[in-house]
Length: 393
Image: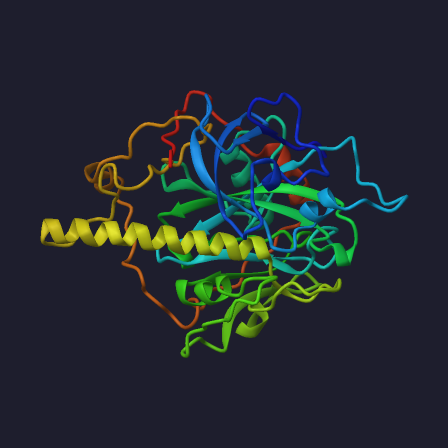
């Protein structure tokens, strides 16, 4: 399947499959992240380490410490071990869907998938050459979970960029896939229970789903793959989280998932043990930072007003959020005022509101597999007349 491409500003050709994107942007030997200017045209993500005409966001870019491409750039390869020369770096988008009660949705990829099987990740996939950024993310959310978010009932903001390879380590073999993943935070006005009631997971791609709160998400994000960083885990971390598992016969059942499963790191040798992907840990850290910044602003606004307000950013203090309309990443108007957010009636509880388990939810209704074949063909495309209020960091 053709996918959108990643380019560097000032270069007309796509980044080569074998090149490290972080390295081309001047990444040093550290772990990052590195601030990166980006602009998304239809079917293209343009990146640079400095501002350029058309740049609409400044996002953190990171790669895992064991990313194979920096090593491949520096060492000769054995005969017959060449990487593709006629392929570029593909663009993917992953949707970090946040409910109104501050939990995020993760799905477990099936064991039969060629890339990253049995890993917990946000819904996501390739952006197609003719797609806008938000359309690609919402389409992947719909194809994998069956969720369609009503326009005007969610906000969105880009979180960060992740350079991904699969296999993820050279000890697993030479990489066959090379992506830049753009993590997109989509904040729904619906609660976790309301969203869960409408989920219809695609059994071809998804074998389980769960909602994580900030407490467990922080513990998962602290387990950095490929480093010797000590884990400072909360003493009151719950031993398990509640999830939903899809069965081979088409049914679904509750799953009590040990928290230790989510804290696993990428092993040195190839295996398909269940764990949270390294890129997802990066996205969870960004989500928690965004959640903390959002709530800090809310507390300040409430203190100034002297009473409880509907939550909103103070003008100029935080990046603007997209308004639930599909469009392109390019409008850099100022953040909406608190009055604008009060009119939108978006309400989020103060952070941190920690819970030991996600809310116990009804099991999803599974869909006839024939329906899934038509989802991609019928997903609504971007309305070019809908402007998007977007973010500039």
